[in-house]
Structure formats: C-alpha cells, structure tokens
Image 1 (tube, rainbow, N blue to C red):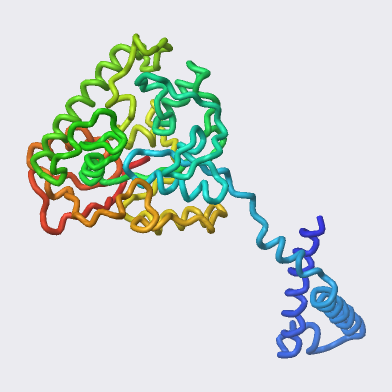
Image 2 (image 1 turned 90 degrees about the vertical axis):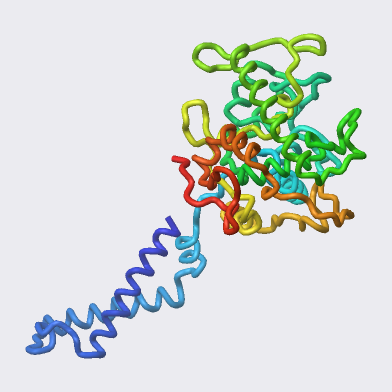
Length: 367
C-alpha cells in the first residue's frame, strides 16, 4: 500500500503544481476572479493551501524510493534453458553459461573438459551402446525428450520443465558443411574410434560432396526405420528395451547430428515450444540481447578464435564453405531439410549459389 499511496501523492502533487502555475498565469476560471465574492475567496484560499501542502509533501516528505519502486517494479525474469541443436554454436553457449554458474545443455548431464562442464545436476549414466533414446539427451528435441522421460527413468528429470527455452538455428547449407568438419561425427572425427580418414586431405570438395550424400542417405533411412518400428499409430514413441546386444540404433541416428532444426522448435502438434530463436548468422548480437532481456547481461560468448569450443586455433588452413556444394548435394539437402528452409526463412537454391546469395534468414514462418 505504501507504493500505491506514494504513486497517488505524486499524481496529486503534479496536479497541484499545474493549478498554482495556472493561477500565476491568470488562467483561472472566470467565476473565481471576475466578480470575487467572500465565499469564492475563501474557496480559493483553501484550494491554494491544499495545493501547497501537496507540493511540500511531494518534494520533502514522500520517499523517492516509493516512486522509483512503483515505476520500475517488474516480475523477475523466467528461468532460461538452452536447447542444443548440433553445429549452431551450442558448446560455446554452454561454456558461457557454466562460467557464470549456469548449467545448460550437456552441462546438466556430464563433465566435458572441452566445454568446461564439471558440476552436472541431473543424474545420468551414458549407455555403452548407441541409442536414440539414451545417447546425448542434450541433443534430443524437447518434445521427444519429454516422451522418453515418461518411458525411461534413466534420463532423470526434464531440464526444460517450467522454463523459457532458447535455441540457435543455422542455414542448412552452411550447417552441413560444419557437420563435415565436426570432431564427433564428421568426415575425420577427432574423437572417433578406429578412424581411417585422418591421413586424407579433408579439404577436398569431392570428399565433401560424397560424404554429404552418403550421410543424408543413411540418416534418412535410419529415421524412417525408427519411426516405423518405434511409434504407435498416433505417432507417440513406444516404450522399448535396449541393450548392448539388442535393439541398438545406428550411430548416425543416436548422435542426432543434422536432425532437422524445426523438430526442436515445434511439438508433435505443430505448436511452438521454443520461445526464443537466435540465428547463427548474427549470434553475438542476438545472444547479447536475449541475455539482457533475462537479466543475464554478464554472459558473453567466448571469442571463436582465442577461446572457441572444438575450434582448431592452431590450424591456418582455409576450410571449405557451402559454395563447394555441387548440384546433387544441393538437391539432397533441399529434400531433406525442406522444413528448415520453409519454416526458418532460409533461401533455397536449385543448382548453384548466386554471387550475392546470403546465408541469413529472411522472414521465418514459425507461427
């Protein structure tokens, strides 16, 4: 009540100041001054006294903190959680959060030296086999994670419950080239087991395009088989048992790399569940604006060259770009990632890229 009464006193005092000013400028109603009577004089004196008291109360008595509080009080920002789509700068975001005491993405589940995660808050034991359900839950689309948690207690609690969500999206052409260089699932994975490609020239456009065609073909087939065998007629995921020797999933599916980005943003009914969509093409500025909105202005992304996550800062070689994609790769990417192009506002090309082609999104269609 103190804040509200202070607000009312301020309104009254401002009206009183206007009243006094109007008298000084002789803009008082004619009825008071043209033919003043004794009663009108007494009324005028009372009004002047009341106005003076209000001015004094406002300037010398009303606590200023009362007014400031009334004008600036707002509800505390909602808890913010990060949805990690592969190859969109997510590890850098996880590092930025952890350096300020916030667990996001993988940091909820495990210790990752390269990211800096060292204090997980969700009990999780990674499987010793490949599983779309259990492997790397931080890369699981939120709607699917909710279904899996209902079916399997091994995934612990859902970090997204009760939070506003944010994610980063990226042009599909650019994203798949980044997948090619990925140290986990790319052409020559740094962390791969038994990798036979480490001695090959990785910056070869022929290898890039062959890898893309092979990867998307295998991923599409694996997703089709999974949907046919593990969903009921309503589309809900069926509870199943998995182990090292049975019901394993292909690694390309379990690791969830290059899964379409719209799968993370919408639920099974087409409703938007990720409230805040950032773009990789303008990530620093958009990330800063979002952190400011949620009262996290101190969070900043690490410099990609000096402190990037999974970035080879010692390598001076120039990497290939989306402009090395051939016509067949473009066609395959268009077919697979069509929902991303259509819903996220990225421009799809037919055969080759024009000189002025922009990786940035235009108008998204998220609603």
